[in-house]
Length: 139
Image (cartoon, rainbow, N blue to C red; front, side, top):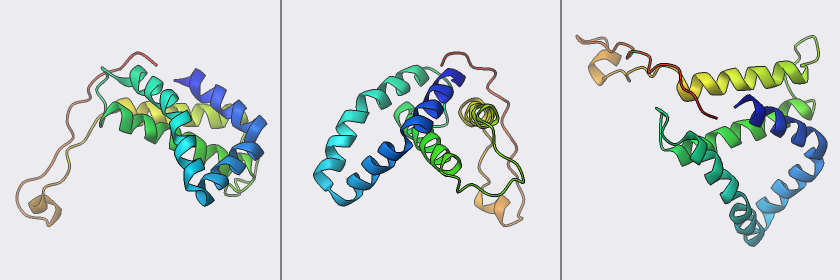
């Protein structure tokens, strides 16, 4: 996973202006948006293929779309200089490690049971976290 994050981060760093222009073009031109989606779908399905067979929080294609959206939005925020003021610069290494760790935890971390309506209202019965599904390998 880290390799994918690092490659995307470096790609976005080098090509941010073009990526943003393409995203903006897709907002104003529906046919371009469809074509852009068609061009990106094989990559999305490739990523979903890496994720298939893991204990995911959802469908591999849905999880893959979440991963790519997170990468793109996070890279845009920080590489554009619009991120919150940390009082220091966010290094590429820290950004990549933070993203990778977050994705590992989000994709392969323990899944907790959702509170039931009675637990949410304070009634009898509560939800407890399920046992961690274990360390996953792959991507």
